[in-house]
Length: 71
Image (cartoon, rainbow, N blue to C red; front, top):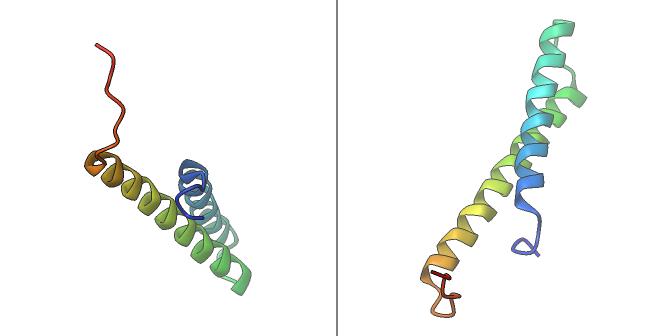
């Protein structure tokens, strides 16, 4: 399931969610439980997306079934 996910969507969406929650809290002047949760979830999504991207690159570089690149 993780391998077939769209990692860039998780990576970018999580970053936007985390930064957005931080900016929103700075704008309001205080943190709430919801904004803290949004920031935490955004960070988890961004970390998961980055990990999936890294796993794919590592798998492709070690796979013996790589496609030969056209020259």
